[in-house]
Length: 209
Image (cartoon, rainbow, N blue to C red; front, side, top):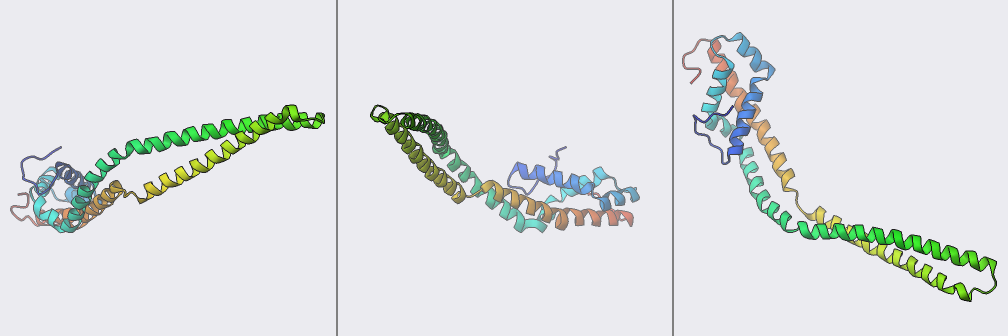
């Protein structure tokens, strides 16, 4: 359920929706739910509406956390564009790694077959001049496998180091959002609701507006 009647102090529409979710979450907190059940002069919908109407003053209690959230989101947007720009090189590294491992497997199998055949024949005959090419091909295949493995290893190390150096803006945004959520809930929304419920319990006028 969205509230469009009251102006809101949020920079993004997504933040307004999050605030509404936090309000609904607060209404299900045990202390608030119990106080609502014990206070017939105000119900959950009235308390929700009152909280929405005072969003500006409530969010002020978590202004520092909200600023950090918006800063993190602003940093994340260009980072997301950079990630899109580097997606093609990253895919290239992945394709190279796959090709390298296929080459290693094929070359290793070839080396095993040719060298195995060479030594098997060499053990059964004195003259190995005719089977010498098997040995050459086997060692060449082995050299290809080792060289490819070294190159692929360096490529994976480079890719891993690059990913490690790349900031994780999504994680920064998630942490900032969680911090804003906790601060807003415990320093803003819940204290406001508790005050309103206490006023309603005492029968004061104007507790809903």
